[in-house]
Image 1 (tube, rainbow, N blue to C red):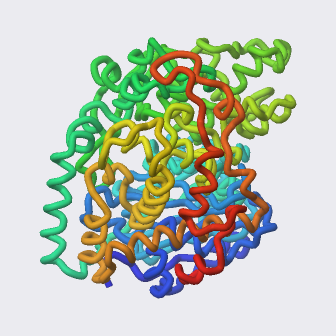
Image 2 (cartoon, rainbow, N blue to C red):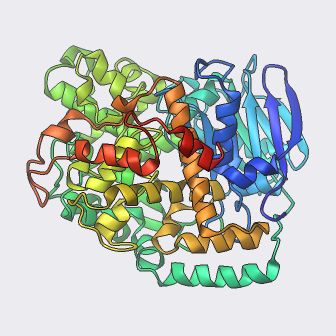
Length: 597
């Protein structure tokens, strides 16, 4: 069968054992790979009452069914584990080249179990797998670790996945980084890796991923690449200006959150936009494996140069913190990459802290001389460092915005869903996307069903962002299709140009499968429902399918969406019906039977 390597690598860090096992192709047919298969295996192998930071938790690092093939953007992989931030199934996505190298080495997935007695790293060189001492790496940042591991490994084509000090210090917003600048960023996955005393995984593969139908794949690839090139977003906007091309678009729609979502329009937004970055700071573009879009940026700022910032980071350290100094925004983003922090949650947590200080909850004596106020870029950058090293008040910030605000008795000041910080779109002015936020299985997340595409950008068609009509159907379809894309190992940005039938043709040509469009989309529905069952099993209820009080009750103060609130109570019951769930948001027996769960 094409696409799949057909083998899983299982490593028990407690015992120091390395073993392989065949990929369960029956499960792969139902859940694909990546997010889907790893999520199903995590559900089956990790009990509901397991502490996320205990040795009993497991990490599933999984490539997609198409990762490492010649399909466009096929460099993605997923990190699936029980999240220490909120207890649900974390599934964090990253790009670059590491995932492709793992597939080239002959593995669809690496499963990490137990806890090493001392810091270690893992070296994978095709079928040679070693657990090595990492005493000299522990305490190093991501950049230094990457260089040191590559030097010791001795192959410049190898790729390194690692945590930084934030993961070592068990920050609940710690990320796992690869290729220096790429991040499996959300849900605290870096803390789980740190809890296992695992510093890094270096991989080099010399094999190749086969296509089941070489002649067919040529035709399918040609058609897909043509659509990506011709599309205005994937063929022009993202490649020219990076993801921060969205700054002005979103701001002009009146949904660009300012000062911890106290407003949603920023008159100075252009100072942190993709256009400004390209004109004044861009050094070069940076593409992931097999990516024709090349949205990645490598830029300069006063004092250094490095990757990004992406749209979300530009917003989180920009408008959300009231900062319009690009040098400060870039420096803060670079520290997130260097120390291994989720740039969205880091920026949002600092913004929450700024509001807590603004309202008098955080006292001046707690700051130890470091400014914590909207608009102070220098102070913001220092708080990123303090978060990574859990210094002073930084130790509270390192646990995320929800726990920070809760510790002062005002959890409602955390702009989060299921304790995961909301990204750069104010749901008060975009009803479908707000519903997607509230119902997202991993919490506040924009890439579980990117309704910004139809409601703001107009792809595949333009929807009225303020209307409720048809939104439950659209959200379900987008969520299910996104689950498919994540499980194929492709970039979500391809969905600006490609539709369901394009993905069906790709997976069938590569793997030799015979999915219909409906069958492939059903894989996404199945994946979504297993994730929902996982959430219910750890104690989540329909009460968790909500938005922060501010976004439900307080109208946007200014801008094009002035006065808007999110109308979630009108949408949620219909969404449950759309999904085949009961009135409490529990999948019915009939729904589970129809999906083969």
